[in-house]
Amino acid sequence: MKKTLFSFCALVLCLSASAQLVETPKGKLIDHMYRSSSSWVKKGWIGTEPGRYDGLVSKVVVGEDGCLYVYNPVSGFDSKSWLKLDPLSAGKYRAKLPQVIFKDNNGGDDDDEGANTERKFLLNRMSIKDNNQYEVVSKDNNFMDFSWDGQTLKMLGVGNKNEILGIVYDNGSWENRYGDWDVTIESFENTPVTPPTNAKTVQYTLSSKEETSPRVIDAAIDGNDIYLKGISKTSKLANVWVKLTQNGNTAEMLTNQYLGTTVRTDFVRFSNDASVYHTYAAAYSDASTLASKLTFSVNAETGVLTCNNVLKIVFGKRSTENASVDGMETFESLVLTPFVKKAAKPAAPTLHYRSAVDSYDYSLTTITLAFYVRNVDESGNYLDPNNMYYNVYINDNPQPFKFLKSQYYYLEKDMVDIPFNYQDKRNEDFKVADDQRILHFYDAHIKKLTVVMVYEQDGKKYQSEPMSANVVTSGIDKVATDNKVVVGYYGVDGSKRQQLEKGVNVVKYSDGSSKKIIVK
Image (cartoon, rainbow, N blue to C red; front, side):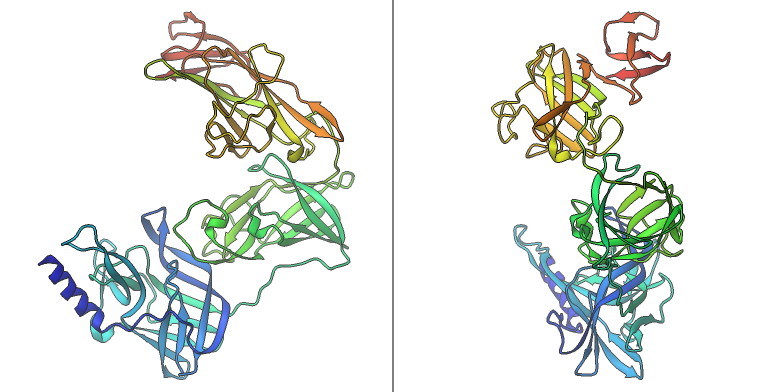
């Protein structure tokens, strides 16, 4: 009975809907356009909030039949279909709704829980009810008008979120992650900058507050212009340039330099947003204040460029309307140092924490060692991470520890020399998170762990000073990164302890400071 009622309801809703247009309509295709809109914007995986989309890559077909066709007509929803706009008068077009823009097989079936039915997504004009919920307008008002001058398409007659171009499932419910109330789609001709072919090629090392381990980037010098390639860490933009112009002891980088097109998963591992965006390098004076340019100071003796502002890699041109929208990458306090390859003693690792935890039946002890590494020498100069590795020493054994594949399931082979950026197949026992390395050990007899960085060049090895840590047998002992040394453990009553114990511990450091640590 429920299935019959559902099917009848779906039939009534869908009978008046135009069929989904998947094939590119015949006519003049205008591709690579720039779409911006005021919309319901996805927040996290399931939330939404009023916001903006800027820089969506869009396209329009001026049809042979006199109609206009708009690809992916709802911002943020990768429907891979076209919305048809019928001509009204000179420069005016109307989308007659509803129109089917997407289908999947996730429809429910009350009579057979194991089966799925086709589900249609219908584009409709919708009006707000209460609590930011919407319903489809009356049949006579179910349309959306647009203007078109051959270059720019604009939505008409909707200026706020009280009415939207929204998506309705074929059961009549609103798909509440999407909806637009102000849309502009413009022709777009920007291209990334490129240096002249006769520019002098050089290299810099780049570091920032977020990226303390430097990396080498290519550069090109043409008179007062400095071109930098691959500022972004994503491989999609590895060959894209930005431009600075030097004037005496300063160099300036104008904001909103175009980088090309990207998707969110070029920057993050997972995203439910499959849309393609025009991507820019934008200048900020601080984390949230938009600036017209970045200013670098130039050291006349060393050639080092330093900037106290913030560079963000963002979707869409930045303006006062969208300045607060999060960027995909942030580089604060950029430092660009002329690169000179040389071998030297690596900087020592820095301890973050170590811990030892017994399994519930005390049959296994898991020891965790977390520390920070940087691919620099003791003076902070760049070292090639491909030529770096580290060794681990157990207790007072002078021979480096061999990690065995038989004990570490996700290890590809037995290893003594651990490459600088190595993580195992699951990032499980050999973990990498930016500059942090986390190792696991499964031996209750381990009382001391030591890590030494090694840099190799031209057959010669350069070893860092050792970083040593006594293993804590209960809880976690956190160590500050300013090289303070723990000088004693105490209870809240002042009693001396040999190690961290369950409950509240007072840890005293060599600089006279103390800290309470709770072990559960």
